[in-house]
Figure 1 (cartoon, rainbow, N blue to C red):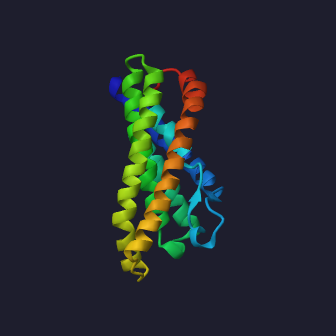
Figure 2: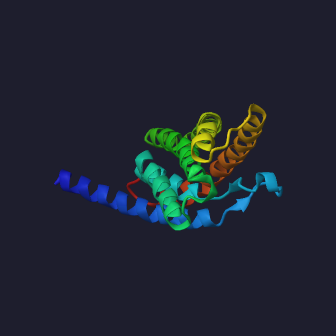
Figure 3: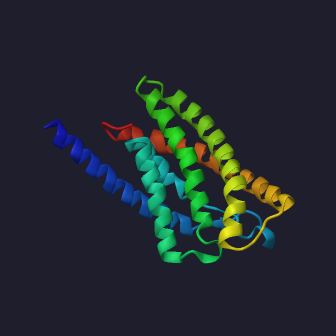
Amino acid sequence: MKKRKKEEELLIAVCVSAMLGAIGFVLMLLEFPVAPIPAAAHLKMDLSDIPALFGAIVYGPVAGVVTEFIKNALELAVKGFGTQMGFGNLMNFTVGCAFVVPFSLVYRSLKKKEKETKGIVLGSIIGFLSIVLIGLGANYVIAPLFFKYFLGVVIDDASLWAAVGTATIINAVKGVLLSIVSVPIIKGIVTRIKGIA
């Protein structure tokens, strides 16, 4: 009986993650430029990590990762590799998971101890630090290799640091937005759903 219940819960989690991934993809299409200058036209912000955050809070970090993967896979399938050869999707997946996974682990751990508010605050702080640091590292390490081997472009140090700095600022803003949005998601939706989080 317990095994069947676990299988049913897993099936529900997979179906919900797929649905949230589709919602995340739609939100990804509603991206907006961060800076109104041609040199930074490829740097855009969207709210597509919100469904992944919801999934991770409700069903655990794996659901968040699956949601992030599905939304990026859908965008690649619809838009193709484009001029960045999927680099944007790779970075979106990386920084999305960098926030969603630690936030959900911290929140769910403290929620079990009846410390929901502390879970939101601490989860937001750790998620913010994670998205900034992992985003910085990923942009510094992956970007030069990606552009060199996929686009045939060698990035000099000055350009690399400028790009990494800009991306880090964007990731920091995204971390703050996700932290702010997490409060109504948890307080308004998640806590009303029985038996989760």
